[in-house]
Every structure is written in C-alpha cells, then in structure tokens.
Length: 160
Image 1 (cartoon, helix red, strand yellow):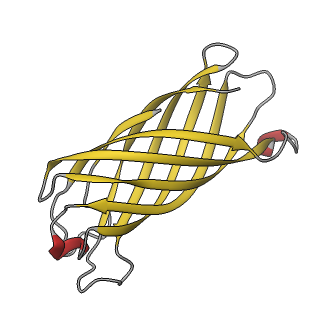
Image 2: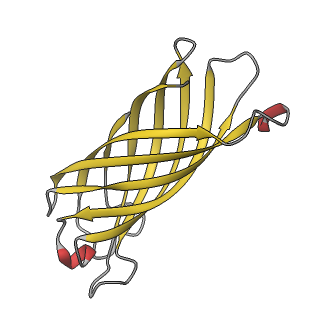
C-alpha cells in the first residue's frame, strides 16, 4: 500500500494549469525471476498490479481513479536491508478533471518510478518512491492536452 502527492505541470507545461492530487494505491506483486547476476545488477524482475484513487486538491477536478500494470526490476545487494528498484507501468484511468485538458472521463496512464524498499523485519518493508505519471486519452477524444505530474510516494509492503 502506497500513498503520496503528485504535482503538475511537470516539464511540458504549455496550456497545462496546476493540477495537484493525492494518490493512494494497493499493489499486488509477483516475482517473475529468482535473484540473478552479480555486482550492481544483482536482482530480479517483478510484475505488479495496482489499483489507485486520488483526490484533486488544487486545480479543476475532483478525482482520478484507475489501475496500472507495472514491470519492476529490484536491485538486490547481498546482505542488505535496502532494495532499490526501477519500474515502468501503463494503465487505465477515470477522472472528472477539466475536459479541456483530458477530453473525456476515460483516459490512459503511463508511469515511471524509482524507489527504495527498506526491510524492517523478515517480511515487512517500508517503501520510498519518486514517481512520474502522464494522464491522457491518447487522442481518442476531441481534446488531449494531458496531465504530466510527479511526486513522492511512501508505503509499506508485506512480502510472502
């Protein structure tokens, strides 16, 4: 389970007003591979499904909700409580954000993230992550300015 705050615009800010929102999600992951390689690249691949909801607290809209399928690479150092990771994901979103920006209620989301998992017990970890999220209708609507946001996420994980 992760929660955070997303701020926009990010980088491409032409015609994009401020839209800041909270983001809370529940994730379920599956390790695709055992830990392999050596040195800095020692790690494994994971697939993660996430459902998320948010509340817009600054800007024209009230909510964003959806799901994302993530691909993640965990860098697993020997004898360390810290596991850095990189991830990329794509998914589906619903929102009531101003239609002049996203064109319609149904949208897509593309996400990138980098983070660190800190194990505090054998199966429990705290997560700290920085995330980028792009929301748009992929030109399926009349308008498609889109939203580019970024922000920190904090969470807790239980690994079986």
